[in-house]
Length: 483
Image (cartoon, rainbow, N blue to C red; front, side, top):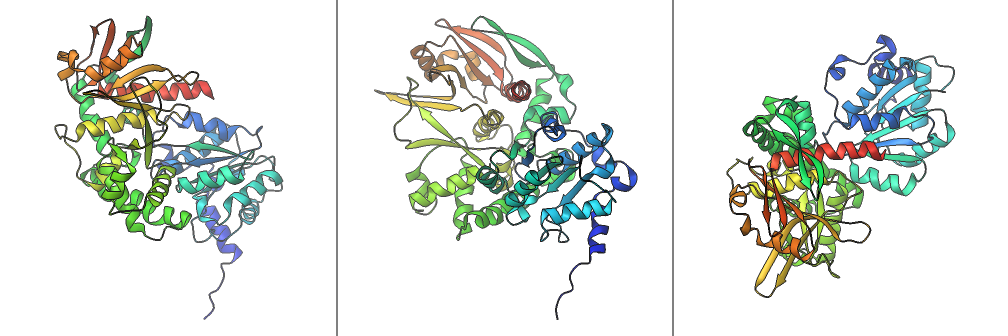
């Protein structure tokens, strides 16, 4: 028996359901009452600006709040005077729409609202990756309708980025929405009152850092952030917090590993990819080599292993960090490298949530701090490791000058107060700073703050939670300046 096609009337009714503001004049309060992510203030100007004839591509990992951010943008547009009858939201994955060309959907919206002209409209296409050749359709729409603003969003971040780069040159503006930074986590839970600014003398300049009026409470939330705090939905749901792994693993990891990446790159053996990611997640922050990864993955061939790592990085699940030596020189062959999860909560999805005293806590604190830095697309972090005679040294993170690749700063990430009491034990950090004539360095702790001087080197100690907060907060501020 042949299946009956959907009638135009059915599609129009569905469009009206998805766009209730056509009838009510406002966005449903289920969305408007949700707190806005700090990244909204960076995203909304791109939506509002109709002078630039480019579509905005909102991409990011699953469940980080992209759809909610779209509704917040629609709410802002209406409150800023745009007619509700000139704003359309379409979830492309809806069975009503996922086989229809964008232009047909667009014309049906005009019909549903009895609009005579498309000029001044704002169109939001959610989960656009479900439309085949979406980038070709969208580019054509941008060219054909210069007086309309198009915004597309989607969770298959790797596919969106790939196709946006290939086909959208000059037509698309990419906007990456990351998992929550610790700064945003604190903001959404309205805990800013326990954090106050302070100043540190950094190479003769008074630099803003932060201290807490309740470091025990802040650390309690830092642990929650590490276990599940990358996702807005979980931090507000006690039910999901009881078993965050079920939510994160099934809805985020499995869909990326078992569906998005295989369909995008034609991966045949998803079990190999899954096994590799599991191994990386458990050892986030550790140094890897292709040889060691190959052995841990059951003898995967190295070229295939390289491709899998590239796929996982393209999906924004992991980040490769490259190594320098004690003179801050890069290695001609990248035999060794570190791999970090882009969000520490991914580890809890696969294994049990951590306690503050667990042995692996140090590695996940390091992962959490790296996750804050990874939101700066203009910055590339490095780590240092070297061997000098009998002495082996390592520094967790180094910032290099983009002009001459000389070290600007060095950071040692510790989930311990031990080195605050005995800073002389930080031999690797002291050696690296001396070799590269650095006058200041930073060391994180559990809850100790202060500055100690060692051989003309100022070691600034700061609790890891406060350092993570500082990096996230400064990232937002710098992004605002760079816009």
